[in-house]
Image (tube, rainbow, N blue to C red; front, side, top):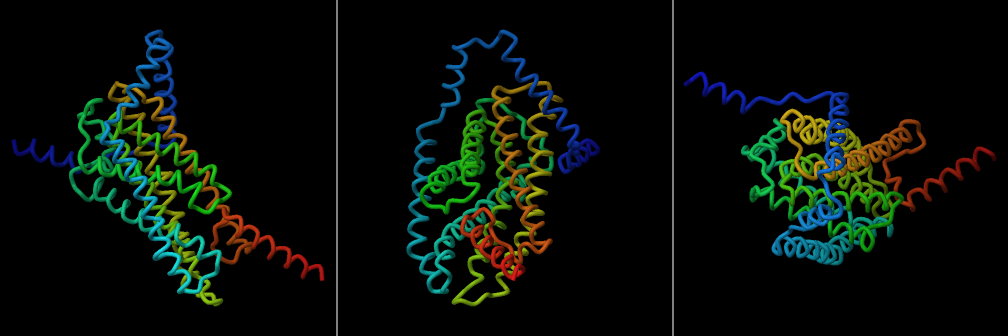
Length: 348
Protein backbone atom coordinates (compact mmCIF):
# COMPACT_ATOMS: atom_id res chain seq x y z
CA UNK A 1 0.00 0.00 0.00
CA UNK A 2 2.85 2.37 0.90
CA UNK A 3 4.65 1.66 -2.40
CA UNK A 4 1.50 2.35 -4.44
CA UNK A 5 0.92 5.59 -2.55
CA UNK A 6 4.47 6.81 -3.19
CA UNK A 7 4.16 5.86 -6.88
CA UNK A 8 0.97 7.93 -7.22
CA UNK A 9 2.63 10.87 -5.47
CA UNK A 10 5.63 10.57 -7.78
CA UNK A 11 3.40 10.58 -10.88
CA UNK A 12 1.52 13.63 -9.60
CA UNK A 13 4.78 15.59 -9.37
CA UNK A 14 6.33 14.27 -12.60
CA UNK A 15 6.82 16.62 -15.52
CA UNK A 16 5.42 15.39 -18.80
CA UNK A 17 7.94 15.00 -21.61
CA UNK A 18 7.30 17.46 -24.43
CA UNK A 19 7.44 16.35 -28.07
CA UNK A 20 9.84 17.64 -30.71
CA UNK A 21 8.62 20.26 -33.18
CA UNK A 22 8.82 17.59 -35.87
CA UNK A 23 6.62 15.17 -33.92
CA UNK A 24 4.18 17.95 -33.14
CA UNK A 25 3.92 18.93 -36.82
CA UNK A 26 3.29 15.29 -37.76
CA UNK A 27 0.55 14.93 -35.13
CA UNK A 28 -1.09 18.24 -36.07
CA UNK A 29 -1.34 17.10 -39.68
CA UNK A 30 -2.75 13.74 -38.59
CA UNK A 31 -5.42 15.20 -36.33
CA UNK A 32 -6.39 17.73 -39.02
CA UNK A 33 -6.84 14.87 -41.49
CA UNK A 34 -8.92 12.86 -39.02
CA UNK A 35 -11.01 15.90 -38.11
CA UNK A 36 -11.68 16.69 -41.77
CA UNK A 37 -12.55 13.04 -42.51
CA UNK A 38 -15.36 13.27 -39.97
CA UNK A 39 -17.04 15.79 -42.27
CA UNK A 40 -16.40 13.72 -45.40
CA UNK A 41 -17.48 10.23 -44.34
CA UNK A 42 -21.19 10.95 -44.85
CA UNK A 43 -22.12 11.18 -41.17
CA UNK A 44 -22.20 14.98 -41.28
CA UNK A 45 -25.40 16.17 -42.93
CA UNK A 46 -25.69 19.57 -44.57
CA UNK A 47 -27.35 21.92 -43.79
CA UNK A 48 -29.03 20.44 -40.72
CA UNK A 49 -25.84 19.74 -38.79
CA UNK A 50 -24.52 23.23 -39.53
CA UNK A 51 -27.62 24.67 -37.90
CA UNK A 52 -27.09 22.43 -34.87
CA UNK A 53 -23.44 23.49 -34.64
CA UNK A 54 -24.35 27.16 -34.72
CA UNK A 55 -26.97 26.67 -32.03
CA UNK A 56 -24.45 24.82 -29.87
CA UNK A 57 -21.75 27.46 -30.28
CA UNK A 58 -24.26 30.15 -29.30
CA UNK A 59 -25.00 28.28 -26.10
CA UNK A 60 -24.05 31.11 -23.73
CA UNK A 61 -26.14 31.81 -20.67
CA UNK A 62 -27.68 35.24 -20.29
CA UNK A 63 -25.52 35.84 -17.22
CA UNK A 64 -22.33 35.04 -19.16
CA UNK A 65 -23.25 37.52 -21.90
CA UNK A 66 -24.23 40.23 -19.41
CA UNK A 67 -20.93 39.84 -17.57
CA UNK A 68 -18.90 39.97 -20.80
CA UNK A 69 -20.66 43.07 -22.11
CA UNK A 70 -20.64 44.79 -18.71
CA UNK A 71 -16.90 44.22 -18.36
CA UNK A 72 -16.23 45.41 -21.92
CA UNK A 73 -18.15 48.64 -21.27
CA UNK A 74 -16.62 48.94 -17.80
CA UNK A 75 -13.07 48.60 -19.11
CA UNK A 76 -13.74 51.24 -21.76
CA UNK A 77 -15.20 53.69 -19.24
CA UNK A 78 -12.44 53.05 -16.69
CA UNK A 79 -9.72 53.62 -19.27
CA UNK A 80 -11.36 56.86 -20.40
CA UNK A 81 -11.66 58.14 -16.83
CA UNK A 82 -8.11 57.16 -15.84
CA UNK A 83 -6.68 58.67 -19.02
CA UNK A 84 -8.39 62.03 -18.48
CA UNK A 85 -7.85 62.29 -14.72
CA UNK A 86 -4.45 60.62 -14.19
CA UNK A 87 -2.49 59.48 -17.25
CA UNK A 88 -2.68 62.63 -19.42
CA UNK A 89 -2.16 65.01 -16.46
CA UNK A 90 0.84 62.88 -15.44
CA UNK A 91 2.35 63.27 -18.90
CA UNK A 92 1.87 67.04 -18.79
CA UNK A 93 3.29 67.23 -15.26
CA UNK A 94 6.41 65.38 -16.43
CA UNK A 95 6.61 67.71 -19.46
CA UNK A 96 6.68 64.94 -22.02
CA UNK A 97 6.46 65.62 -25.74
CA UNK A 98 2.95 65.98 -27.16
CA UNK A 99 3.37 62.70 -29.06
CA UNK A 100 4.30 60.88 -25.85
CA UNK A 101 1.45 62.47 -23.89
CA UNK A 102 -0.98 61.14 -26.51
CA UNK A 103 0.46 57.60 -26.38
CA UNK A 104 1.28 57.23 -22.68
CA UNK A 105 -2.29 56.51 -21.44
CA UNK A 106 -2.68 53.49 -23.72
CA UNK A 107 0.55 51.87 -22.53
CA UNK A 108 0.03 52.57 -18.82
CA UNK A 109 -3.50 51.17 -19.07
CA UNK A 110 -2.32 48.00 -20.79
CA UNK A 111 0.65 47.63 -18.43
CA UNK A 112 -1.67 47.73 -15.42
CA UNK A 113 -4.13 45.27 -16.96
CA UNK A 114 -1.61 42.74 -18.25
CA UNK A 115 0.40 42.88 -15.03
CA UNK A 116 -2.68 42.01 -12.97
CA UNK A 117 -4.15 39.40 -15.33
CA UNK A 118 -0.79 37.69 -15.90
CA UNK A 119 -0.37 37.36 -12.13
CA UNK A 120 -3.87 35.93 -11.80
CA UNK A 121 -3.31 33.48 -14.68
CA UNK A 122 -0.03 32.34 -13.08
CA UNK A 123 -1.79 31.79 -9.78
CA UNK A 124 -4.67 29.92 -11.45
CA UNK A 125 -2.57 27.61 -13.60
CA UNK A 126 0.67 27.15 -11.64
CA UNK A 127 1.11 28.57 -8.15
CA UNK A 128 -2.39 27.75 -6.89
CA UNK A 129 -1.32 24.11 -6.66
CA UNK A 130 -4.61 22.52 -7.75
CA UNK A 131 -3.97 22.53 -11.51
CA UNK A 132 -1.13 20.74 -13.30
CA UNK A 133 -1.79 21.79 -16.88
CA UNK A 134 1.64 23.42 -17.20
CA UNK A 135 3.60 20.46 -15.83
CA UNK A 136 1.35 17.85 -17.45
CA UNK A 137 -0.53 19.24 -20.48
CA UNK A 138 -2.34 15.95 -21.09
CA UNK A 139 -4.20 16.52 -17.81
CA UNK A 140 -6.30 19.22 -19.52
CA UNK A 141 -8.51 16.37 -20.76
CA UNK A 142 -8.84 14.53 -17.44
CA UNK A 143 -12.54 14.19 -16.68
CA UNK A 144 -13.52 16.21 -19.75
CA UNK A 145 -17.13 16.22 -20.91
CA UNK A 146 -18.96 18.75 -23.07
CA UNK A 147 -21.18 19.55 -20.07
CA UNK A 148 -18.43 19.85 -17.45
CA UNK A 149 -18.65 22.68 -14.93
CA UNK A 150 -15.96 25.35 -15.28
CA UNK A 151 -14.01 25.92 -12.03
CA UNK A 152 -14.62 29.35 -10.54
CA UNK A 153 -11.01 30.57 -10.91
CA UNK A 154 -10.85 29.64 -14.60
CA UNK A 155 -14.36 31.04 -15.19
CA UNK A 156 -13.23 34.35 -13.67
CA UNK A 157 -10.15 34.36 -15.90
CA UNK A 158 -12.31 33.71 -18.96
CA UNK A 159 -14.90 36.37 -18.24
CA UNK A 160 -12.30 39.05 -17.49
CA UNK A 161 -10.23 38.23 -20.58
CA UNK A 162 -13.31 38.00 -22.79
CA UNK A 163 -14.53 41.40 -21.59
CA UNK A 164 -11.10 42.94 -22.03
CA UNK A 165 -10.65 41.74 -25.62
CA UNK A 166 -14.13 42.96 -26.54
CA UNK A 167 -13.07 46.32 -25.12
CA UNK A 168 -9.75 45.97 -26.98
CA UNK A 169 -11.51 45.53 -30.30
CA UNK A 170 -13.41 48.79 -29.72
CA UNK A 171 -10.32 50.56 -28.37
CA UNK A 172 -8.27 49.56 -31.41
CA UNK A 173 -10.42 51.79 -33.63
CA UNK A 174 -11.49 54.53 -31.22
CA UNK A 175 -8.86 54.86 -28.46
CA UNK A 176 -5.50 53.37 -29.49
CA UNK A 177 -2.94 54.98 -31.77
CA UNK A 178 -3.27 53.58 -35.30
CA UNK A 179 -0.16 51.59 -36.22
CA UNK A 180 1.22 49.75 -39.22
CA UNK A 181 0.05 46.43 -37.78
CA UNK A 182 -3.34 47.60 -36.47
CA UNK A 183 -5.20 45.50 -39.04
CA UNK A 184 -3.22 42.46 -37.89
CA UNK A 185 -4.02 43.38 -34.29
CA UNK A 186 -7.72 43.51 -35.16
CA UNK A 187 -7.48 40.00 -36.62
CA UNK A 188 -5.64 38.90 -33.48
CA UNK A 189 -8.39 40.26 -31.24
CA UNK A 190 -11.09 38.51 -33.28
CA UNK A 191 -9.19 35.21 -33.21
CA UNK A 192 -8.67 35.58 -29.46
CA UNK A 193 -12.34 36.32 -28.83
CA UNK A 194 -13.30 33.34 -31.02
CA UNK A 195 -10.93 31.05 -29.10
CA UNK A 196 -12.31 32.25 -25.77
CA UNK A 197 -15.85 31.71 -27.05
CA UNK A 198 -15.26 28.25 -28.58
CA UNK A 199 -13.20 26.88 -25.70
CA UNK A 200 -15.73 28.20 -23.17
CA UNK A 201 -18.75 26.62 -24.89
CA UNK A 202 -16.96 23.35 -25.72
CA UNK A 203 -15.40 23.16 -22.24
CA UNK A 204 -11.83 23.33 -23.54
CA UNK A 205 -11.27 25.84 -20.74
CA UNK A 206 -8.20 24.08 -19.33
CA UNK A 207 -6.40 24.54 -22.65
CA UNK A 208 -7.67 28.12 -22.77
CA UNK A 209 -6.14 28.86 -19.37
CA UNK A 210 -2.76 27.66 -20.68
CA UNK A 211 -3.08 29.85 -23.78
CA UNK A 212 -3.75 32.91 -21.63
CA UNK A 213 -0.82 32.10 -19.33
CA UNK A 214 1.67 31.90 -22.19
CA UNK A 215 0.60 35.15 -23.86
CA UNK A 216 0.18 37.79 -21.17
CA UNK A 217 3.70 38.00 -19.68
CA UNK A 218 5.15 39.24 -22.99
CA UNK A 219 2.61 42.06 -23.04
CA UNK A 220 3.71 43.22 -19.58
CA UNK A 221 7.29 43.62 -20.81
CA UNK A 222 6.17 45.22 -24.08
CA UNK A 223 4.10 47.91 -22.37
CA UNK A 224 6.79 48.54 -19.73
CA UNK A 225 9.30 49.12 -22.53
CA UNK A 226 6.92 51.50 -24.32
CA UNK A 227 6.17 53.48 -21.14
CA UNK A 228 9.91 54.05 -20.68
CA UNK A 229 10.27 55.09 -24.33
CA UNK A 230 7.61 57.76 -23.74
CA UNK A 231 9.16 58.85 -20.41
CA UNK A 232 12.65 59.12 -21.87
CA UNK A 233 12.37 62.74 -23.03
CA UNK A 234 11.10 65.00 -20.23
CA UNK A 235 11.22 68.78 -20.31
CA UNK A 236 13.34 68.58 -23.44
CA UNK A 237 16.02 66.45 -21.80
CA UNK A 238 16.80 62.79 -22.53
CA UNK A 239 16.98 60.56 -19.46
CA UNK A 240 19.41 57.68 -19.88
CA UNK A 241 17.79 55.48 -17.21
CA UNK A 242 14.52 55.22 -19.15
CA UNK A 243 16.48 54.37 -22.29
CA UNK A 244 18.25 51.53 -20.44
CA UNK A 245 14.97 50.27 -18.94
CA UNK A 246 13.29 50.30 -22.36
CA UNK A 247 16.16 48.38 -23.97
CA UNK A 248 16.35 45.86 -21.12
CA UNK A 249 12.61 45.28 -21.17
CA UNK A 250 12.62 44.84 -24.95
CA UNK A 251 15.39 42.23 -24.74
CA UNK A 252 13.56 40.44 -21.92
CA UNK A 253 10.34 40.49 -23.95
CA UNK A 254 12.09 39.00 -26.98
CA UNK A 255 13.37 36.09 -24.88
CA UNK A 256 10.03 35.67 -23.08
CA UNK A 257 8.18 35.79 -26.40
CA UNK A 258 10.24 32.92 -27.80
CA UNK A 259 10.05 30.83 -24.61
CA UNK A 260 6.33 31.34 -23.93
CA UNK A 261 4.76 31.80 -27.36
CA UNK A 262 7.06 29.82 -29.67
CA UNK A 263 8.30 27.09 -27.32
CA UNK A 264 5.84 26.40 -24.50
CA UNK A 265 2.73 27.40 -26.46
CA UNK A 266 3.17 24.91 -29.32
CA UNK A 267 4.85 22.16 -27.28
CA UNK A 268 2.24 22.25 -24.53
CA UNK A 269 -0.98 23.72 -25.97
CA UNK A 270 -0.81 22.37 -29.53
CA UNK A 271 0.57 19.13 -28.10
CA UNK A 272 -2.48 18.81 -25.83
CA UNK A 273 -4.84 19.55 -28.72
CA UNK A 274 -3.24 17.03 -31.10
CA UNK A 275 -0.78 14.42 -29.79
CA UNK A 276 -2.63 13.81 -26.53
CA UNK A 277 -5.97 13.39 -28.31
CA UNK A 278 -4.45 10.94 -30.81
CA UNK A 279 -2.97 8.89 -27.97
CA UNK A 280 -6.26 8.84 -26.09
CA UNK A 281 -8.13 7.85 -29.21
CA UNK A 282 -10.85 10.48 -29.23
CA UNK A 283 -11.41 13.75 -31.05
CA UNK A 284 -13.92 16.12 -29.41
CA UNK A 285 -16.34 18.07 -31.55
CA UNK A 286 -15.00 21.36 -32.95
CA UNK A 287 -11.37 20.22 -32.62
CA UNK A 288 -10.83 21.27 -36.24
CA UNK A 289 -12.17 24.77 -35.56
CA UNK A 290 -10.26 25.14 -32.30
CA UNK A 291 -6.95 23.95 -33.77
CA UNK A 292 -7.35 26.22 -36.80
CA UNK A 293 -7.68 29.21 -34.46
CA UNK A 294 -4.66 28.06 -32.41
CA UNK A 295 -2.55 27.77 -35.56
CA UNK A 296 -3.67 31.24 -36.66
CA UNK A 297 -2.48 32.54 -33.29
CA UNK A 298 0.83 30.72 -33.77
CA UNK A 299 1.29 32.33 -37.20
CA UNK A 300 0.73 35.80 -35.72
CA UNK A 301 3.19 35.05 -32.91
CA UNK A 302 5.79 34.15 -35.54
CA UNK A 303 5.06 37.33 -37.50
CA UNK A 304 5.53 39.62 -34.50
CA UNK A 305 8.65 37.75 -33.40
CA UNK A 306 10.14 38.40 -36.84
CA UNK A 307 9.44 42.12 -36.29
CA UNK A 308 11.32 41.99 -32.98
CA UNK A 309 14.31 40.34 -34.65
CA UNK A 310 14.17 43.00 -37.38
CA UNK A 311 14.33 45.74 -34.73
CA UNK A 312 17.25 43.99 -33.00
CA UNK A 313 19.04 43.75 -36.34
CA UNK A 314 18.64 47.49 -36.94
CA UNK A 315 20.01 48.27 -33.47
CA UNK A 316 22.98 45.89 -33.80
CA UNK A 317 23.89 47.24 -37.24
CA UNK A 318 23.70 50.84 -36.06
CA UNK A 319 20.68 51.81 -38.18
CA UNK A 320 18.86 52.54 -34.92
CA UNK A 321 20.50 54.07 -31.87
CA UNK A 322 17.71 53.27 -29.42
CA UNK A 323 14.64 51.09 -28.87
CA UNK A 324 11.51 52.49 -30.49
CA UNK A 325 8.21 51.16 -31.83
CA UNK A 326 8.68 50.81 -35.58
CA UNK A 327 4.96 50.10 -35.98
CA UNK A 328 4.11 53.73 -35.22
CA UNK A 329 3.86 56.04 -38.22
CA UNK A 330 5.36 59.09 -36.49
CA UNK A 331 8.39 57.03 -35.41
CA UNK A 332 8.95 55.84 -38.99
CA UNK A 333 8.65 59.44 -40.26
CA UNK A 334 11.15 60.62 -37.64
CA UNK A 335 13.63 57.92 -38.66
CA UNK A 336 13.20 58.79 -42.34
CA UNK A 337 13.91 62.47 -41.62
CA UNK A 338 17.02 61.51 -39.65
CA UNK A 339 18.17 59.22 -42.45
CA UNK A 340 17.68 62.01 -45.01
CA UNK A 341 19.77 64.41 -42.91
CA UNK A 342 22.59 61.86 -42.60
CA UNK A 343 22.50 61.24 -46.36
CA UNK A 344 22.63 64.98 -47.06
CA UNK A 345 25.65 65.44 -44.78
CA UNK A 346 27.48 62.59 -46.52
CA UNK A 347 26.84 64.19 -49.93
CA UNK A 348 28.06 67.58 -48.68
